[in-house]
Image 1 (cartoon, one colour):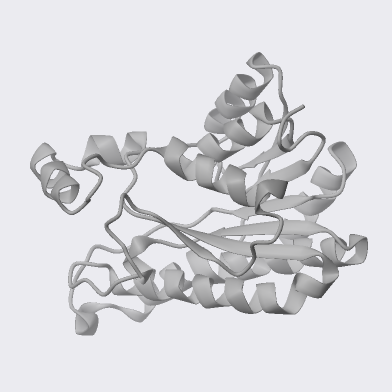
Image 2: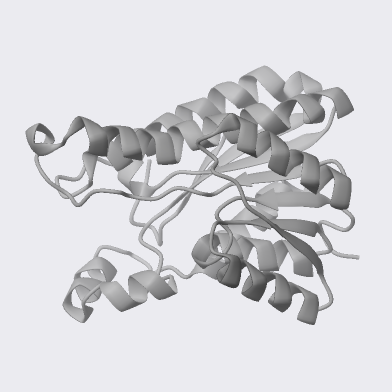
Length: 252
């Protein structure tokens, strides 16, 4: 019996990186997992890994900045796996390099807000009514260390969008606790996903490592472990928390 036995989980942005690690970890703990993304090949790899390890997963696609597409995705998950018990709103990312505020275009600003904050809002908007009706549910959002401390090299639109996700999650927790729904947020520091490992120069990795009291950089599995805890009944009386998975580099 795993910690999430027979639970249905939707993990957005789970075709690779942090999301894939969360999907795999949830499946190993007994959850039936909907793996979401846009890359069909990457999705099939994650679903295949889960199946190879004895888990149950399906792949789903949707543009999560469009509510109608999310609704179609939700319907498919419910039809094939059952009502969604756990939502991990992981999809997002930074769409601009760091730079001065006055150099940010409206288009770049809107892309970061839509791809992070609006996407999280719309995904929750679709899944939440069923959870409230069933008087049970668990929502985990993903922020960033960029939203936890001001740093001149943070991409401003990304940091602002992720900070918005944090207060969205906490207000959500305050609104939904009486319905048996918990909502928490994870804020990772830079995580060495395959993509980050390839694109971050070794010298920059060294400087990043020096920022952390725990002298290593984070792995996707570090975030997956935190998500598993928040999704499980071990965290049954925890809601509205922003959990820093940051090697001690963020202390709020």
